[in-house]
Amino acid sequence: MNGLNTSEEKNLWDIRQSAGMVFQNPDNQIIATVVEEDVGFGPENLGIPTEEIWQRVEKSLEAVGMLEFRHLSPNKLSGGQKQRVAIAGIMAMKPECIVLDEPTAMLDPNGRKEVIATVRELNKTENVTVLLITHHMDEVIFADRVFVMEHGHVVMEGTPREIFSRVEDIKRYRMDVPQVTELAYELSKEGYDIPAGLLTVEELVAAIDTLKKSQK
Image (tube, rainbow, N blue to C red):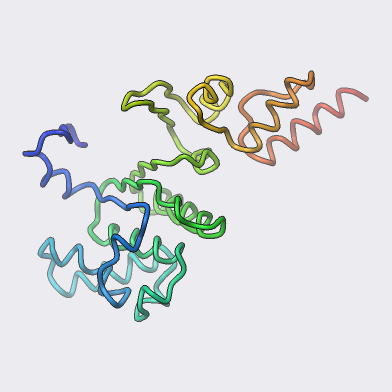
């Protein structure tokens, strides 16, 4: 991170000034009894002046779509909403980078969509670098870069399209590919002229449409 080796303890404080982390279970990260107080906890510990803390809290909650819940107890929120509050808490600390460690592992499909949409929006509008650790391959199709790791080592690296064009290699590492990519791969195996590495439903529909026109 910024040229600092994360394995060296002497660098930890400096790294924590520019990188924030969101964990699997938001209940392990949320500590306050009111949403806005929880979001303000991080910047308070950094010694940020009170007036600026509340400005950051409001902006962060607004960015993740949780401003209307600011006075509620986190216990009244859904899993996806709690995770968005956890992300807001990190955002309020104004990190250059947010590391999300399996942030949707404990969520239902709707919660997963909420969190991933929030993360994508932060990356786009706030210019925050996002490092997403996940086993859900559908969550990485919009990433700039994908790294596949095994036993702590990078074994594959590339764009989502480059990575998911190598279905057999992915499966060799006991991982799945996005459902659309899997369907396109199976159609290709059956002899249909479908491009490798399709990532979205729209791409697959377009490929099938092109195939149908070529067969007329």
